[in-house]
View (cartoon, rainbow, N blue to C red):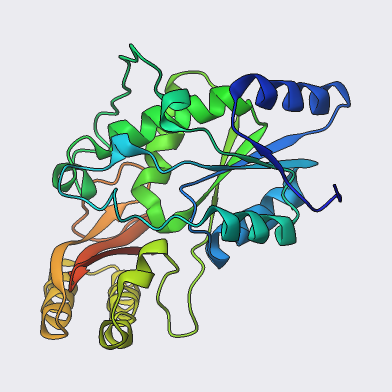
Length: 282
């Protein structure tokens, strides 16, 4: 086995033995949680993890508890061989790939709910989603016990929820957000982009263009209601079905009427059958 070939781990005792050996050698450990279908955004997280720690574990687990009954769990892209090849090239040390029975053994009865941060945006639209995310990430952090874990800012609400869980439960790892990686035309990288038809893909970059324009107007300090309404109209005219478009306080995710401190413009919209989310800082 070469140094660039990641260990493929699927049982918890072996994972813990591996991490314990690294710890015994005084090596720091970073975790990059994923659901597989890896793209350049994920690999950017791996690269940042390699800069921050001596050892990098990438988890690959399509978590059933964060999908609703009408969502795309069964068709979520899975390609383990391609993922492992990408992780080898990226220099990850281990791929943690538990099955559902390992993550949720018989009798499993615990879920983590985060109030406040999940009251708006994706929360009401995806009941149970953030509870599933908070629970599985807590388990991953307890399984790997890393010094830090890295998450993309594209899923900004998720990032803030995880930060809240770690703070509230007195957990040790640093949670680090990494800026969104985009295609040349602005579309945020996502495993779900492969669902887009060629025609939809040509329109998809308008999502980022619209929220970037709103952010630019919001920075001037005026009311945001007008730019938001114009943005929704522009997206609908381009064929999007907008679920929300909001300017929110970056910490609490509460909507703001005008920007007076760190904020985010966040959007979720369907383009055809594909749900896209994105956000930009203000």
